[in-house]
Each structure stands twice: as structure tokens, then as C-alpha cells.
Length: 422
Ligand SMILES: [Zn+2]
Image (tube, rainbow, N blue to C red):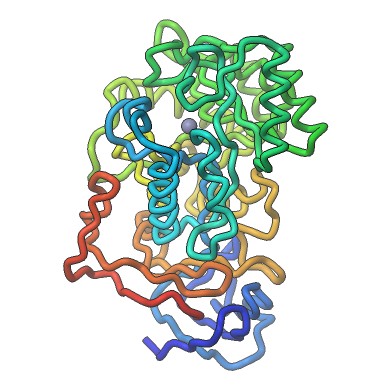
């Protein structure tokens, strides 16, 4: 590996070369990119200058986009146990540590879809962390799914007030729990928590205030009502029913695919981490079969890992989603696009998730070729955030799969760098 070029943040100009380069849509040749002042200036055949950094046998990709995380959850215990008894300061510190873990795992943009007391909002704009979009506490029914995060609403007036509060506090998105949730003792996942009219009121007010709406939906009714309400992203879309035997109406699958709404699939799981809950494992084939139909019909499927909810889903789990995307019928290249530019578009961030002129130079280098070896995406060799090389904490690969917060610092295979330019 050639010597690194370092210079003050934002002033660097570097021509980076690797064996392969994916620009967010396709692989381009030659695999060269010019980074200037935190942005991508030129790519591929448009690069005319000599290479300044040759990374050798790696693939350059845009940084990954995770459309659904929970930075206040560390995965240990029930959702409620994960936050109860913690002060806002403690949750804020945890969120910062977990966001950093996401960045070091290649996730340069993430959307937090549910914190407590708006503690994640202060993390935005920190160059040591990914780009973060925040929802604050999710809007839910009284004693509904994740009620303990503080977003309970008893009636229509409360819904309007909740949307307005999120706009006033500067949230980036409104999250609504349209149905109950898996792992929630209070409301079955398939059951709707709000009427179609409630959802319409939320969306209308949020859009009036310039905010998109992300709807958490498991049951078919909640999915259908969320489409009608005009939400901006649908999370999960698992088609769960009372019999725990998802057999969605084909017409609903068609409506979902044709809606143009970005569909954030709860993909990604560590291959050697703790097993997911048995119910999830049992339901997965039926859920993914339905999602495969949606994809085949042209649905816009992106990745929202729900990182944080269990120890199988640490905040750097997003690279593993490639296997789920392939299992619903995507080619590796389509999957990479869903994980980068697709996710960025779903979040309304056209300057993210791509290595094209003018885009933010959020970039990762992975060992191997994801086209023939999809697992290569999880072998993160380097991460750049706005053109600045991120210091990757040295740790052995297996340690990455253990419970969040159990970092150790023995000699690892990963290369350590100081944060600095390319
Ligand atoms: Zn979630």
C-alpha cells in the first residue's frame, strides 16, 4: 500500500485508485476517483490526473446507507429494559458510541427512527460520526409499541401536537408506529394502532411542515392505510397476521410495488452473532417470499436494519443485508445499489450513496469483489467520511459480533489509522 496523503480536512485533493469501483449504480472503469474538499470531483474515465493513492486489491463503494436504526438501544434485554433506568445523558453517550461503531462499519449515513426524549438530535453535524437523520420519539398509541420512548398520543389533537413538536425541535422525519411491533408486549405486531384517517392527518401536517413520514408497519391493514395516507417510507412490511402465517393479498403487494414509496426492509444480521428470536426465524421464508414478489413487481426496496434491537443487530450490521437482498431476487449489483444510492434516495439525500461528481466523498474500501463474493462487503478495509479517512478501531473480526459495547483492543487484523485525509 502506498503512503497516505494527509492534509487538513477539506483542503485535500487526492486521486484514489483501486482494483474495482462501484459508483452507486454500476461498476465503472478505470477504478479511479478524484476527491476534492470532501466531494467527489471525477470518476472513472473522466479522471485525467496521475494516481496519488493506490489501494490495490480492494473495491471502492459509496458509504452504506442504513434507513432504520435505534441509537439508544444496545440490544441487551427487552426494548424497555434497554433504556429504563438510564438518564438522557447516558443514552446520548451510548448513541454517540453506537453511531461511531456504525461509521467504522461502513455506514456513513443512517436514520434514527426512534430515540427517547430527542437525545440523538445533538449528534448531527459531528464529523466523527455518520450523517444522521433523526425522528425523535416515535409517535405511538397510549401504551402502544415502544410507548416508553415518550411518543404516546391519545387522540387526534395529540397527534397534531406531536408532529408540530417534532418540527419545532428540528427533527428530520416523523416516525409513526402504524401497527404494533415484534417483541412488544403491549400491542400485537399485526394490529393497527391508528386509523387510516389518523395516518392521513399525521402525513398532511408533517408534509405541511416540510417533514417526511416513516411508517412502521407489520400488519396488512397498517400497510394498506399507510399507502393511502401517502407516507414517505414504509418500514418492515412483513405482512404479519394473527395466525403468524403471512399470506398477503396479491393486490396489496401490487399496490406496494406501484406506490413508489420507499420500502425499508428489516435486513441484515451478523452471521456468527446470537440467533434471532425463533419467531423471526420461522416467519422469515414467508416474509421474504412476499418481499420478493414486491421487488419483482418493481417495488423500491432499501435497507433499514433496525440496528440496536437485538445483539444480532449491532449498529455496523448493514453490510450483511446484502445476503437478504440477494435472497429476494436481487443481483449483487442491484443489492449494492439498494444499500447505497437507493437508501440515499429513500432519505431524500441525492448527494449521498454514490461516487459521482458532486456527491459527498463518503466512501468505503472492502476486501474482495462483492459481485462474486457478496460477503466481501462486510470486510471493511477503509472508510472515508466527506473525504476524510476514518480511524478504524483495531479489533479481531469475531469481536465485532459480540454484544454492543464490549470492544477490546488486542492486535487485530484491521488496520488502524488516525482520522485524517485520504
Ligand atoms: Zn425500529
